[in-house]
Image (cartoon, rainbow, N blue to C red; front, side, top):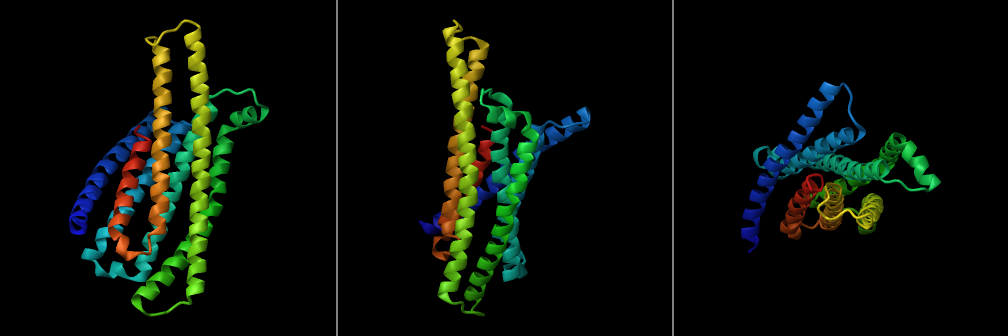
Length: 278
């Protein structure tokens, strides 16, 4: 069974690699052409372009990390593995937080609440998004430091060059997992809150339209229904990706779970691609 999975998963990974690069490349190209024509780019398009670039980087990192050492054994060194982990961490960080920023941007652009705090954020939407992205760099710096130390300790033990104190190794790994989980949990919580508020606002507006006599065949009613369905789909897909991220991180140092880890990575990538195509 394990051998069968080891055959199937690479096929799935390469299929997703090809489809993901095509879809993301197409989105980036369309936004780039539109940017050149207009001589300016909308906030949503700018975030989406950065998002698809980060996701392409994530795809390339996973595929190169998985298969390049077969052709270039030098890439099996501890230094190379740490570099791959650092690149993956950066790509995943921006992929997750740009997704969150996009959901917050849609909330502030579409929804109208009478709250003074909400109106204050709505009027300064670009500054809000910029501050969120800059603020998350704190998570990224801590994460990069801890992931480098954690991978270095683990690789040294695998190579037998250094035997670390078990307590020290556990403290470093626990710190890494804490930062990783907390950063992704904050991102998911913000996306969850934004999506639920957006769904509530759309549902409330849809209810008013129906009370005013507009039936289900009215074009604006259909648009609202499709918008609600899209937001719900995004929320479910992002929740699944969050769970696959955590599960992958929990098993990253456990070689006997290699097929499970590979499955989580492939499944997570598929889900991640679907979040902006849903």
